[in-house]
Length: 153
Image 1 (cartoon, rainbow, N blue to C red):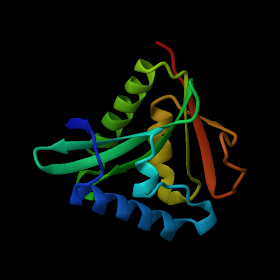
Image 2 (tube, rainbow, N blue to C red):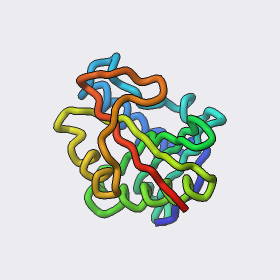
Image 3 (tube, one colour):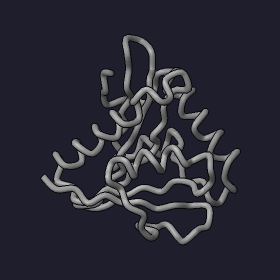
Image 4 (spheres, rainbow, N blue to C red):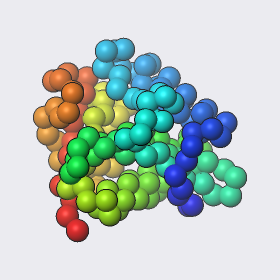
């Protein structure tokens, strides 16, 4: 898988992110959806990556910088034809390694509490994330699960 910083203009990226948003709104109440749209992912404090095999999009992920030492994982998504092939794990490892290289000490994320999100929660647990309370601007929400990972060099 070739992982690269992405400018969010490729039609396959737009389609995958729209599917991501559609699933979030179909699964969670509107007020509990924290996924970023294209404009949110284009903010200066967000780095967005896509993973490709040739001209086929395998998945994506993003890192939002919250402070000099704390980042948030956003928009982790695997293309439906590549689910359970290790794409998300490789993307997550890439985000963690990048976070270490820029001096972050903590990575956090918000994901849903519904069964739909169980594979995502398991992915993060498998990579050392632990459940935690809300961080940043998040509030306690029964539809959200918060997780964090403390990273060192």
